Length: 540
Image (cartoon, rainbow, N blue to C red):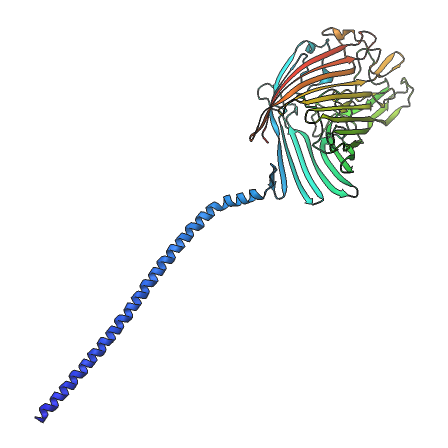
């Protein structure tokens, strides 16, 4: 019995141990299950966090793409908002202004000058020339123009600018109107300026390059791009208008709140020469060889000749714009020109008419004169008036008529021809769109002639034989003494808007030439009636 009892106890202990082991295993299993459940939850949570992060990343990427796409327009808008509202383009601190127009123009002349839109007033043919008996009509786009102005401030007191202006009125030897009416661009103006504010009691202005001559009338002060050419369609403007466009270096100062201006300019010289009238011996005395021009060798058209030059034309000008009751309606100016006429004289034989010593020498002759003008805003925004004049010796090339500067004198030196040129003008601003204008002018030259024995020389000789000037085909070359002209027209701004402006103009002019009287033939005269039309589109 004792053995049975001991065995039962041992079995119970084993069963209890097994139950304890099973309970421990169940407790471990439950702990593991709980632990794995927590891990699965963590994994699930992590997966959800990753999915949310991925969604946020994709949304951010989409936002970034959208922002990148809109960034250029935003940058442009911000840049545009910062730019001055002045109608100019701006690049690296430089303001750029485009200008110019496309022109479709036509001209009719009662006498054929064989000229484009710029007339040759001094070459209107007399009745002996066949061209005087045929009229002329031309269409042209050559006065179309393009300009560029670049402006920048070096510092608050120093301002720099560059300006260029081109048209197509150059006449190369290959240019014609046969099929492709092709002509070269032409420099009108190309120059640079420097302006200094508050230099002592004045402001200073320096100009270097090709520009309107300082002798040209200004509308305001003495500043570039304020020159005052007549508003004609004719590219040669009006008889009596004083101007040139040529290389120069100019220094200007203004005083007293820009009421007083003073300037001096050194400008490119050129001399024009008179030819001998019919019936005279010529322009040069026998026994003398005179060289006053030469054929070009480089970078000039070989069909042209150039005068001998060794000193610039010197021009000085004063201008005054007084304050009158809070405005400046009057502009007054006066100027002077000094010129040096230059040639080479070779006395080839002792048997010359003046008994000059044999030999060669260079001859200089002083020339020049004075001029001035007045512009007046007679009725503000309605009527503008102007008058200008020039008088002196050797100044023919500075007026629109282009009469000669000089003629060879008896000793071979150039003799300047006295000339007076004058012009008046009125412009009526009839409406905001329509301007009416009327201009008149004349140019008058004096005789510079001499007689040695039976020979007659010089310009305007009273011994010229001019009877054939009225006979078609007759030999007659008169010297012009007087040129007069009256020109009038209108400009109508037929469109003005965001695409620029369109202007239409019509002009009529009547020009008359009167020759010096000669020994026969009286005083020959000729004239030309001209009608111009113009359509111009200004895109800028």
